[in-house]
Length: 403
Ligand SMILES: Cc1ncc(COP(=O)(O)O)c(C=O)c1O
Image (tube, rainbow, N blue to C red; front, side, top):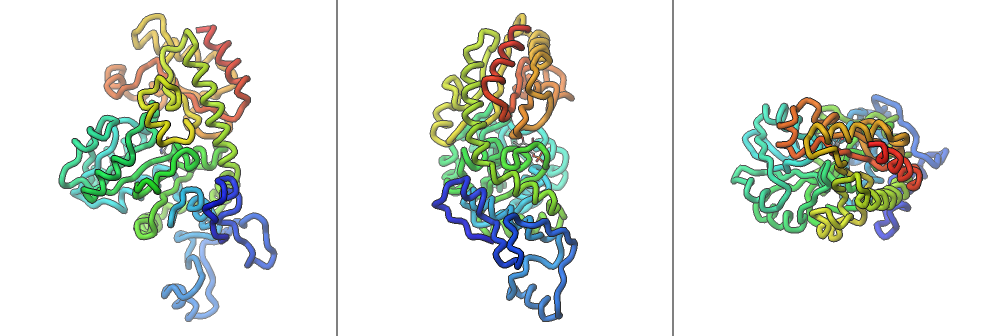
């Protein structure tokens, strides 16, 4: 694979790093889809050489990897400045693999109260059954520190968090965690490698749902874990033995999507900031949650840690009064009046997607339980796609005038 030149810009790395097909006699420009379950060896000594790491062979069996997959991993390493990386069949699997490689039964993990609910369900419904205890802290370093005990092995958090895009002081977290021998794992999906470089700050492992900005086309589910080689080797072992390697077609789509990642991400940042500032001034909008809008509680941290605010905007609409019922009615009316964004889950793709967390991730809770989780029924989560900003604003203008 072509070696990454870290001095080159993010787009140059996204397009070229990882794709070195010069040893192939046909010299394809694009890394081929290596559709095979097994690899052939000419003689037994070739197999010995492979196991004794005396050959260039990647694997003897495709559950351990394919060249299509390794190309994606090397591109991601170049984007994050990571020593090593693995790709996985989903973002959830990336998180699960990173945690399973870092913790054992009887140990403890601290995470934030705010984040993707699927991750919390995985912790509570499954990891807990295997003896991984979890504490949930408010979004502050002090709360994380207070939740740690002498069994704490991992601090896991999203940066920024979903859906309110909150932040903590990562450098201070690293200093604290290192002093206690705690592994830090950051799900940087919402930031992406364009807006946040967490590894140089000393974070141990970074995970991504590649499903979102990195692939960017709402057509692939995949994940990645990045970090130092020794730690990634442990995560790779979990992935390979649980069998959560993505298949070569999935990897081909990823490598195709990632090539335009930096260009797309800059536009997500620009368009979302314009729309967030516009929404913040609208009389029917109660509050906008976007890290680079001044009213966000963590605006200062965002300026320090993020190169852009990303493509996700959460905002609360004004209902007829301050009740949850009125909020739900107003947010439903707005979503149904919009013509461009599609009502659906996920984020980070070219198509704008919109929903109410109440009716998506938190559909199974009653209003009181949702409020306890900090989810207001007038809250809307809008993933700004790559449609023209003016068209999206005009669409919101007409839809807001109807609620
Ligand atoms: C912040 C975040 N992390 C992880 C995930 C899980 O990713 P995937 O759906 O690729 O498993 C999601 C999914 O929505 C997410 O929003």
